[in-house]
Length: 101
Image 1 (tube, helix red, strand yellow):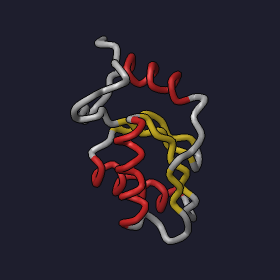
Image 2 (cartoon, one colour):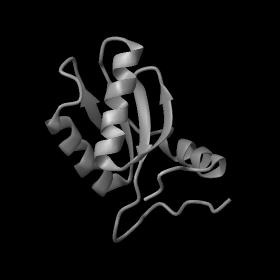
Image 3 (cartoon, rainbow, N blue to C red):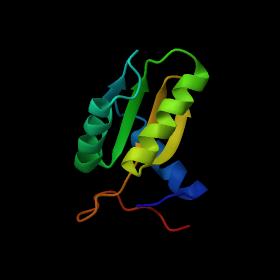
C-alpha cells in the first residue's frame, strides 16, 4: 500500500484509469461514513477507483478527499475538477502491478 506514488507509477495508473467511470460518489452531505465504506469495498474489488465529489467549493472537495484518503489508506493518483482517481493495492492479491521506476 503505497503512501506515495512516483511519477512513473502515477502515469501508469492514470493510463489505466482513463476509461473508468466513477464508482464512488460523494454528494452534498460530504464524506460520510457510508461513502468511506463504499470506497473501501470498491478499492478491495478494483484497486483503482474513480471518485466523483459533488461537494460545493474547491476547499470542501479537497478536505473531503483528504478525509477519504486518510480513512482508506489509498494514494491519490490524479484529481481533476470534481473527479479523483485513487489507488490502493489489494492486501493479499494485488491485480495491478506497478512499474518500479
